Each structure stands twice: as C-alpha cells, then as structure tokens.
Length: 178
Image 1 (cartoon, rainbow, N blue to C red):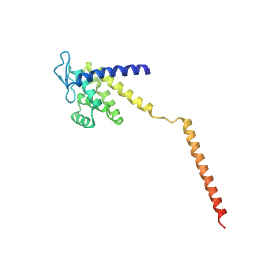
Image 2 (cartoon, rainbow, N blue to C red):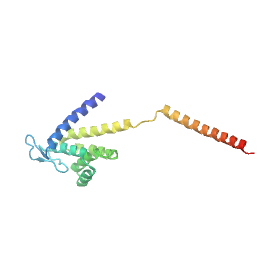
Image 3 (cartoon, rainbow, N blue to C red):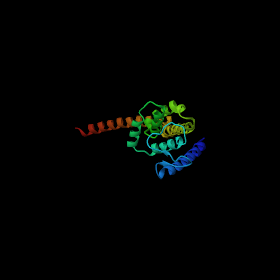
Image 4 (cartoon, one colour):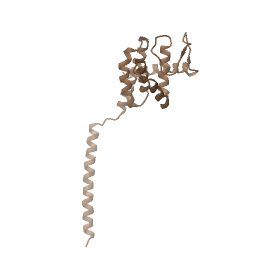
C-alpha cells in the first residue's frame, strides 16, 4: 500500500513539474489549440480546452502562493457558487492544517458539480489532501501505554524522593539546633 502511495506521489510530482514548466515561462498556456488560455485569478468551470490547463495552473499557484495571494483569492471567491467553492477548496487545501477540514468539506460537496473532465483532477486533489492529513496524524506521536506507566512511576518516585529529602533536611536541622 505504501508503494502505491510512493508511485502515485512520484507520478503527480512529474505531472506537476511538467505543468510548472508550461506555466513557468509566462502566464499564457500554450499547446495544441490552447493559445487563448490565460490564467489570471480563479479559474472557471466552463468546459473547453482551457478547463484543465487553467485549473492545474491554479492548483500550482495555490501550492506556491503567499499569504497575500491566498487572502486575495479567498476574497475573490466569496460567492456560494460551485466554481468559487471549488477554488476556495484548492486554496485552503494548501493553507494551514486548520483549513484542511474546510477544504475537504468543500471538495466533497462541490466535486460532483464540476464538469466531468475536471472531476478526476479534483478527486485526485481531495485524495492527496486526505493522504497529507493521514501523514500528519500518523507523525504525531501517540503515547504508548508502557511509556505512560513509566512516566507515572517516575513521577511517584520523584514525590517519594522529595519527601525523603524533606525528612532528611528536617533531621539535619534538629541536630544543628541546641
């Protein structure tokens, strides 16, 4: 199962690297018939030759965009349309861990409203977000019951040692006083 995730991750990295090369030279996306595709701001959900290139470019920009860009896009996508909600999901999925839950909810509610050619990409982004959430939660150390028992025992022994030290200090103080 881990091998599948690694292979999938490598495939996506290669795909996104290629997309960055396309968008890296200038903002015009060129290709077979896609010369009129221009990525500026949130993409639209209109089927055509620009649909996938614009959403891929937007996803890359969301991944690498700074906080100011994110705030600006979130303001631009404040409406309650499927297009705006999906754009917010993309931006939030590359935000803070606290925003991931909202991004997941937006993807799940709006994914079926996207044009059919765009749905596999959005499904992939949702799955990738879920995988990142799983990785983060598995990286958070969970307390082994044995470790907890040892910590409790250590705390108990520390209390006993402190009590014995106090008794010893009291006895030493009595010896010194006439």
